[in-house]
Image 1: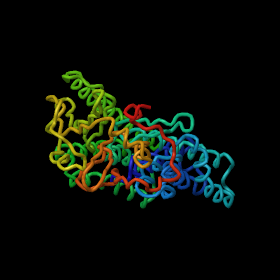
Image 2 (image 1 turned 90 degrees about the horizontal axis):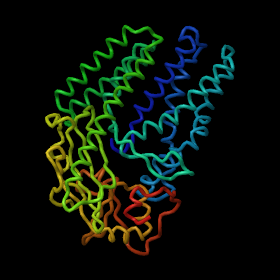
Image 3 (image 1 turned 180 degrees about the vertical axis):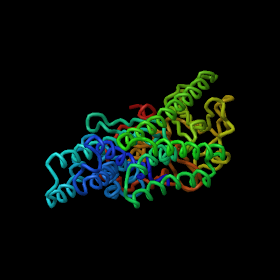
Length: 411
C-alpha cells in the first residue's frame, strides 16, 4: 500500500468527481446537460486528477530502485506539465464530442476547464503529506512537504462519498461510492492502526454526513463534499502544527543543544490525535534522527502503533531527547562527514535527491542508505538502497532535484 505514495489514486479520483459535480450543478444540473456530458465530466475529471501519476510508466529510464525514488513525483508532478496532461485527458472527450449533435462548444470548453484543474489539484493534494512535491520546476527544484494527511485517509472518503452517492443516479456509481466508504471502515477496523473507539467515531461521522447529504438539495451536495473535505484537512493541519510544536519544544530542552533542521510528521489513519514524527538535527559533528510518537492534546490512549517501530533497517540506538509528550522510540546518530563521503558516490548522490530523513548502515555485507520515513522492517525495503561496489556504472537519466538535506551535504 505504501507504494501508492503520496495519496492513493482513489482519493485523487474522488477529488475529480467532486469538482465535476460542482461544475455540473453550476451549469444547471443533470436534466439540462446534453447526453453523456455528466458521465464524461466525471470520468475526465477523475482521470485528470490521476494524470500526474503517469510518471510510473517511465521510471525505468533510471535502473533499479533509484528510478522509482527520483522519478516518481517527477516532471509530471510539476505545474509546467499541468496543461499538457490536461490536453491528453481532453483528447478522448473531444473525439466523443465530435460524434454528438447535442454538444455545444461551451460544453467542451467547460470540461477543458475541469481537466485543467485536475493536475493542479493533484499536486496540491500530494503536497499534503510527508513525501513532498517540487511543483515549481524548472524555476525551483526544492521539495515542499505538507505533513498533514496519511497516504490512505478513510476520513476523507467518509467526508466525500456520501454526497456523491446521493448526487449520482447510476446504480453502478452509487455502488462504487458505497464500496469506498465501506472499504474505508473495514480497513480501519482490521488494520490495527485505528483504535476501536475511533473506528466507531468514523462510522458515526459517515452516518452524520450521509444523513445531511440525503436531505440537501442536489445543487448543494458537491459544495457540501468540499466543505467536509476542507474540514478534514483543517483538523489534521491543526493537529500537525501541534505535533511539530511538541517536537520543537523537546529540542529546545536538549543539553548539549542541537540544531533542528526539519520535523517530519505523519498522522495515523483516521486519527488526528496520534502522529509518527522524526526530528532531524545535528550538533555540528553528527547527524541525528529521532523517531517516535506524539499524542496531540494528550490523547495517548488513541495511539495504536505499539511495536510499529520495533525492528527497522536503520541502526537505531537508545531513545534520547524525548519528553512526556514526545515518546522517542529510537535514535540514529552518525558522523556527518560519513554522509558527505557517501554522497561523493553517484548512487548515494542520486538517493540524496529524494532522501529527507537519510540514514546509512555499514557492515560486512556492504553499505545501505535509506530514509527513516518509510523504514518499518529489518529487510531492505523500497525506500532503501544497497550501494553497489566502487566502479559500478552510475545511474543514468537522473533529474536534478535539490537534495532535501542539502544542509547536511554542505550545499
